[in-house]
Length: 168
Image 1 (cartoon, rainbow, N blue to C red):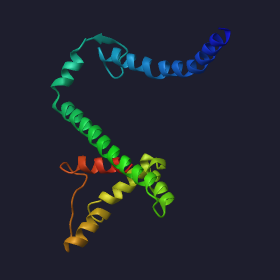
Image 2: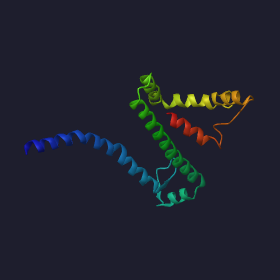
Image 3: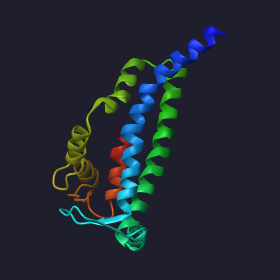
Image 4: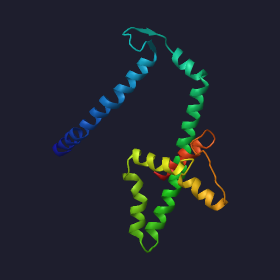
């Protein structure tokens, strides 16, 4: 009986710091942001005016917000599905089969995880560059004439972002 109580105390002491930090740095700020969303306040004004759900109603009517939300949901779903598919396929291949250079492929597949977002942004900016980017250069080589696809322009930007996120 005594060891059960002491074990419970030990577990509580081990978990308590994580719970406290999660509460202080995740739960409290989230609740504060929701509280702030119910008020209208100027950028440099200390006074707040309670507006209730008016801010949320304005967001629901904003076409740009709806488009941004749709793009975000599309990114989340597409990137997650494609990433899981590739992860399962590569994991199955690298764990079940004896492939020559298996450790090399494991390292190559892990490299994007250790690169910073800034480095990845630089890599894909060079790949998607319209004038002399790697992707347009490859397309120009196969087509036999200069190809200048604007990968970061409106119709192609979501596909370009999905490719970069899946690669990462």
